[in-house]
View 1: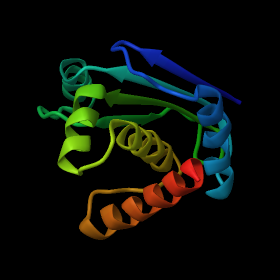
View 2: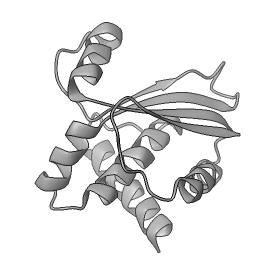
View 3: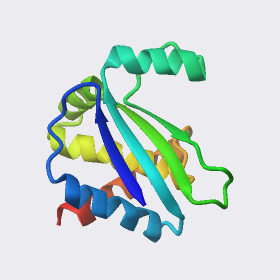
View 4: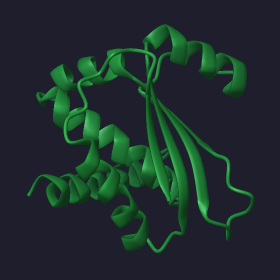
Length: 140
């Protein structure tokens, strides 16, 4: 099992060891096999290019998750792109700290790889509850 953090934009990611130990716990709790995960921290502009190129979407987003696993039953391999600019803005909008919002998005990407969706209001609320659960577990 491996977790990588790539910084195209500098981000103060505290307690990397703790986070690297916690993410596999999330996958275990969700009954999902886990192999490798790469988090790429980038700018709005970089993620907009990824969004255009791979998803044909022309708008800013905070996160894009790619499942690179061989099949649904094989261990998860994923790439998660996170816009640090969006995370900063979301923290202000949601009256949260940058650290909390950053971890929310980190867990959000992992939850996508576990099969959770957020396209409908119901799915989005369920995903938010899951994020809150994992934030509570992680920061307790």
